[in-house]
Amino acid sequence: TFSDTDIMLSEVKRRFTDILGKTCPRTVRDWIRGTTPGFTNHLNNYDICYALEMNYAQTAEFFQKYYLTLPWNCKNKTDAIFSGIMLQKKTEQEAYQITLVIGLL
Image (cartoon, rainbow, N blue to C red; front, side):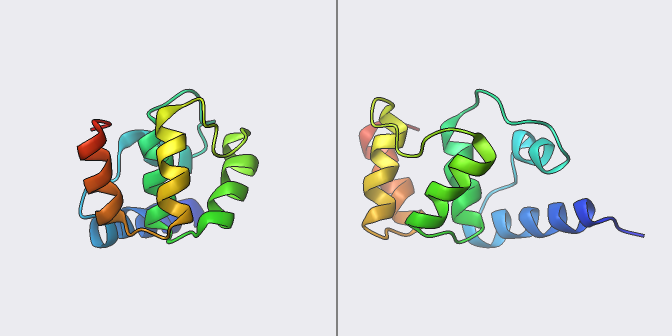
């Protein structure tokens, strides 16, 4: 039988594929299995928020509760860019294009 973790992991993997068009990174899979998030590629943090179709406020709350960090740390280039991207309600595809142009990817 599937545990709640297995069900959640399956859904997140499906959303990464269906919504983001890519495979779920190992780091994200490990988080769902219970590994405490540490210093990581911030793009993974935003990818999971896009995969779960979170809005600006939900993303901010998720960062505070799960990553135990303040959202939108504008001293970090990735956070500053995604703050604007999510505040303007850009899609994941638009965000990807912006990050390519800026050089985050």
